[in-house]
Image (cartoon, rainbow, N blue to C red; front, side, top):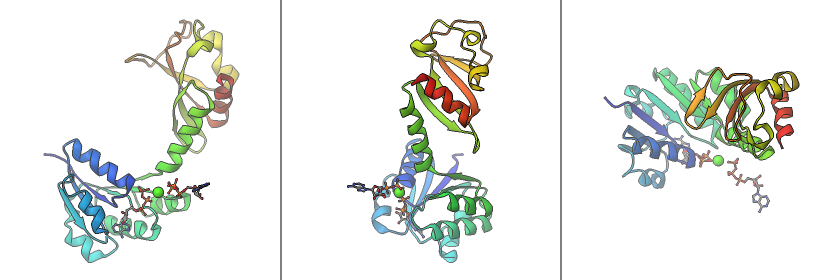
Length: 218
Ligand code: ATP
Ligand code: ATP
Ligand code: CA
């Protein structure tokens, strides 16, 4: 059986989630309070309905209780996002993912039991900033407030040298946890093997240390 999803709020973010899930063949209940938005998704989602999800009765009548995973992508109206999330929680929805508009909103969502809070503008901004710092930085993933993982292309600076020679741990306090070569990923990289320019190092560490490492590659 196909898993069921509902997306509340069909702006750019919610809209693209709905589009992608539908394209992957999943059943999606698309909800927005604006008729125009809903009309855009009539031929895309399996169901598209006009509804204000801050109205408890309306929410119940949607039959949302039977849906496994609900994504709340209401942006600007933080109050509506919080209220909708609380009511979904009360209805016993197993998995609730919510888009946060700011850090305060994120905190409230975590407190009221959202299972997964996403912050796409902030996170994409951070990732892009790290890519801009150095041409070698391919991706950036935040693990906690203080720790991250980056993907770094070995490039000319590291090519022909080994992890021992580069001494990344001693010099920057970061650890290389894996090395990617094409589709292959080696999770216990040999410390004395020579790196190739196309190798991708997966580096974990404190943000401050990763920052120093990134700047050394700039
Ligand atoms: P984007 O993803 O485009 O950045 P945004 O974060 O700026 O969107 P909004 O445009 O404020 O967010 O909201 C996204 C959608 O949520 C809008 O289409 C809006 O009509 C819808 N929406 C807002 N409040 C409710 C509500 N109470 N019930 C249902 N839909 C709602
Ligand atoms: P967000 O990243 O929060 O989703 P957004 O995509 O909704 O933002 P806006 O809030 O419309 O975009 O614009 C982002 C910022 O760009 C605002 O702070 C605005 O003041 C600024 N801005 C818009 N137009 C101009 C302009 N012509 N020159 C300088 N700054 C501008
Ligand atoms: Ca926005």
